[in-house]
Length: 327
Image (tube, rainbow, N blue to C red; front, side):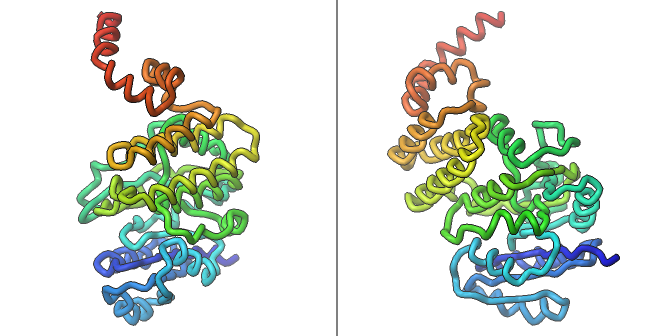
């Protein structure tokens, strides 16, 4: 019986300095039944000049007009023939055994989706072994549904990066294509749909992925009103999808997303932060913030926006009170 084919889709835009490392990590997989698809999203840094060398090694290369990473991933999906899909951003890296180990584990557990821990790095993956993202929550030896995982996202305040996933093709077909609108939360919105349909999710609990930290990460992702607005709209899409399940626990996930936008934008974009806070308040569901007893009381009394202000103002008092109780 032939081995399942795995399609590794690599969108790239002006990442000439990084994409060779990403492609090499795909070529060097111990599992050999792979097709590697590079989609150049209209780069202006000469990325396409690398194509002849890639193609000599069997990589399928395409150049399209600039339309954003999600559009490039969709183009890659249209060309992919694999039974499983690995999305790999041009500045990230796969461990040599990632596909082999995840695929074997998925087949053993009859899973349609799997994830692994990862390491954040800046220059070279091998220099960052002490920066592993550690899964603090859940029993990752168990299988669970995608919806259960999203509940944990909301209640335990964590996430899984794109590079960490390996997805069965049938699940991709249920989730559909990526939303082509440019959005800092494009991966969060897409994998919410993937998780929505996932019946059996497993964790291959070994570091098999490497995520490059670049200047485009973290706060810089929300450095304009347009980006904040696009992310907010994606939260609304996620919420609308999860409301179809009639499980209030799922609302903890969009609540968390609105909280994170509030937290990251309140200094530079206070009005947009206030909008996220109001939507956080409107969503009736649990929150990981309930574990912060005093803060949660202020949020329930005054709402997230003003409750946070009052709590911060009175925080020295609460610190003294908690200290006296513990003494």
